[in-house]
Length: 280
Image (cartoon, rainbow, N blue to C red; front, top):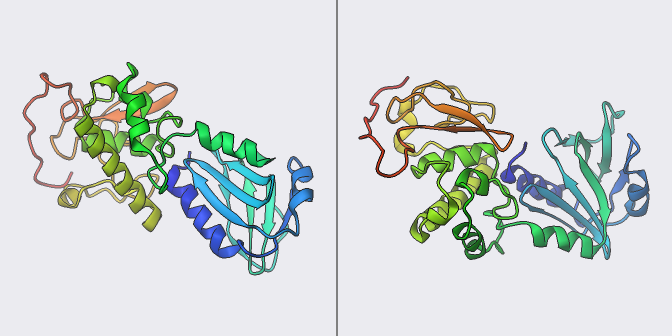
């Protein structure tokens, strides 16, 4: 599933390509045909992301809401138009480019009130200026749920997915099963600041970069599915870059969870870390 930085990059691209200009909207596959008919030819007024949700506003009570889900993608192509291929749920055509939406579970036309309701139920987005980390911590500090659950709860923190969850927990030496209410305010402030920095870098470069600069030399991996080197994500059984312990894996709430049993052991049971000094 695309993580939050991907949606913010899409919103930024659409602001540059389409906002302020009339946009032709259609639904070659058919499911969005009625909504497309109401907005085609209108000026796209704004494009924004909140977590893993994308919003295009065409005027009062004309908001296109898209959620890419696990397999959704939005292409970016230069004109001239090509014939649609595959299951194109929505096509946007501007003055120089066009975009095809495929595989998304949600593509719908909403009223302002309906769009606002989605924003209201989403948690703090590290990439939004209006994010409220205090509200997120209030939820976390009262919860018995493990951090592995809370970081993926989009009503608590919007935009964090599997990769960022695994990596930020490792970077802060936190056991994924730590109850939210056991997290101190100082730990939360450090965690939130790191999420802002990590997602911000992902937004800037288009990749998920999680290795601290001093650890780059410890990995000779060309990259995981996101195109970068990581500490734990999808490295099951491989040695931890910092201590050599095999990276563990389990299924947690129907998603894959990765962690280092030594570097992220619960307080009081953590062995002394043995720093690795050479690449794997």
